[in-house]
Image (cartoon, rainbow, N blue to C red; front, side, top):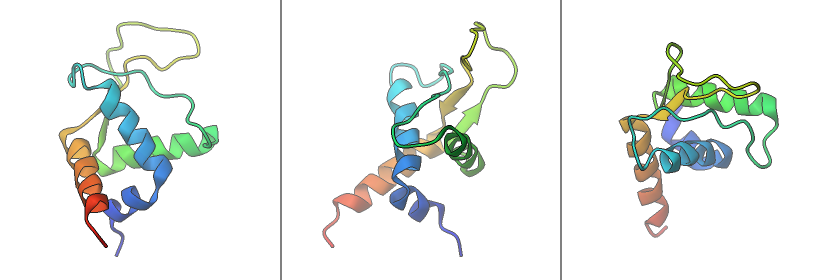
Amino acid sequence: MFDEMERLREGKELSALLQHYREVGEVDRQAWQDRLGELEGVEPRQLVKLHGELLAYGWLEQNTGITPVLRLGAAASCYRITSAGIRALKQVQSLEMQPA
């Protein structure tokens, strides 16, 4: 059986991407954030898959409708972390802090 929490814990790139959206959303979690276009050590094609994975788990939500600003080469105001995404990160972090 597939366990998305295990995937988040072991997938450092997936965790780093979700952490990014948590950090940029700390000031206002309701504000839509620009799509992260680069992540160190991750190929662009893989980054697309990671975004899709976060959406599939319900840890990230996508704004496909109204984007207030259009910028060439950027996907503005299109993602934000969900409450479930915040909980998932907290759960993984608490598991990492427990002694083995």
